Image 1 (cartoon, helix red, strand yellow):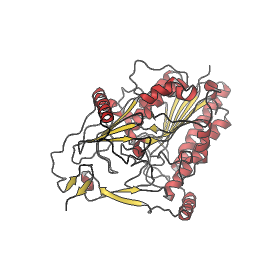
Image 2: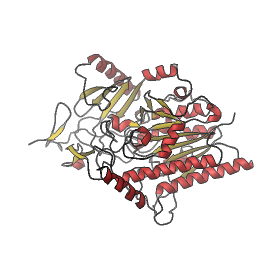
Image 3: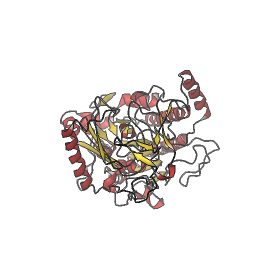
Image 4: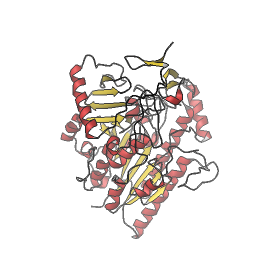
Length: 490
């Protein structure tokens, strides 16, 4: 049987509720909504980490960030009451990516867009990709408007928009491969990573879209500087005196314009696949690397979920995830518009892509993820087994948005969070309290103990590094309450 093509679209910092099909009351995404209507939407999908480098490493490898040793964004660093722990400054070359697996199976492999997994000797072509367009050590673009100054992407005409350009580059690869297949020159299928820099800061979008979204925001009584709540002091050194800023409603018109442009470009990719008569022969994945940026510059709101990018609360971890299988392999097996409510992870992408493409799994590699194909094509025992598994996170760092070092575990409807600054644990029942407002650690003692043991065992298994107290007295002017709240001493 012919192997399907694979397109993996990863958006940077797109929040769980930033799409029309996931419940946004402000952003408009008809093209992505159409993709969801043709595929499977996972309503409780999680990133493997609350920020980009570790979550992207896990998407590529199917392995937990702590097991890889890459738990912080490449180039990130911060200390507060706790000292920082080391994290690899690149994706180690010994890690086996899905690009290597697909190339070994005879696929062309392309990466277009953001990488942020280390310096040049660790760029995409060193991890299984034949082509790299736009991937480098950048965590965000210097500008979305050409000239970009990107070492792996030629500048376009002045004012060209980066998301448009990356999509154009991806479509050119699709068109070329389709022409070669039609002529018999090269019949190999392709794997395309289209990892957009959008919707990461800096907030920049085409002026006509910004104007349209500004008018919508005014009509709805929202705007870029409204609905911002000033919270507690930021907990790490170089921000002493600054406070966490949280957005409570979606309404930033520039961010909305970035999402609108992104949506158009997702539609352009679908149109290119359709025009080349390969849409039905292509697995398409759409997801985000972490939760939406809810604090600091605060372009979006993840409510009713708590917090956002950088935090192990739900808003920092839950992400959109849509998968459209290839009809040639799964014809009549997947009902378009299906929703799956089982908790899943970005760790699951690698084994899922292998199974949906008819490729062998990798028994010699330790994968922390599990294939989701069974949830999509023949629900049954897989739902029960995957519903019972535990999902783990370990982020032993400070985040510029206001989060402190933390680990967490979710199994079923229960989630335990362990905060290292205050040596406290919080327990939440997510079915009735997805916003994590009611800490049940003191009353649900057995659930807390069970999850605590699971977390302890997992931290040992992955050789997780746990931060220790900072010997410096830099933070003597702050106190931390028993509930973890940080406040200034009078």
